[in-house]
Length: 227
Image (cartoon, rainbow, N blue to C red):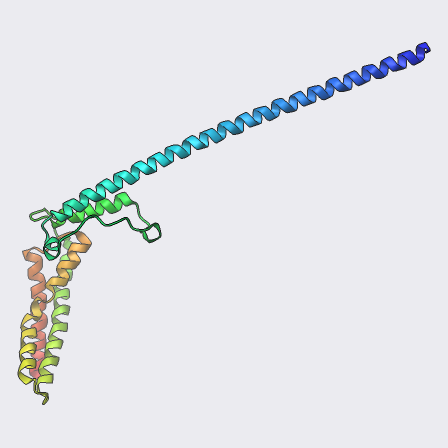
């Protein structure tokens, strides 16, 4: 073997060693990068799992709190002594409503609204006064209810004139409806004020409804008298 050939082989060996070292270094870097990425991904997955566990725990706690509050409100409703409990006895707490039938609202807000309604059903429980801007609307409401009842009364009296064999019952019902007409606006006004503002008809508001009904009754009496 000549010196030139020996040097050529030594050069090839040195090149092969350098290539091997470069490939080993690249493989090491790739391994380190992959290990770092895997560590980061594992840490992120652990963090997400921990957050999911916390959310699940919070949701479970919220469900328990809502169920406990619902049971407490149901017990309060059973002992409220309002008109609802006088009409029928309330049984045990109903089963939860399926998820697809639940209203799109915060359960805490729904429970707060239910608690307010139960407090309002208690005897002697204070209620907010009727809003002042509602008071001018009460006479027209009473007048409208009285007018409708008066028209029904007039229709009954008119039917009594026909030969139906029910002259006196129809006439009696007509005059009874006409006498009650000024007061027929009280129930719808009370229901409206209770549901809309949680208030109760006081003496002044009741008088406004009746005054409106009396005015409509007088107008109907004059109209029937001149007809």
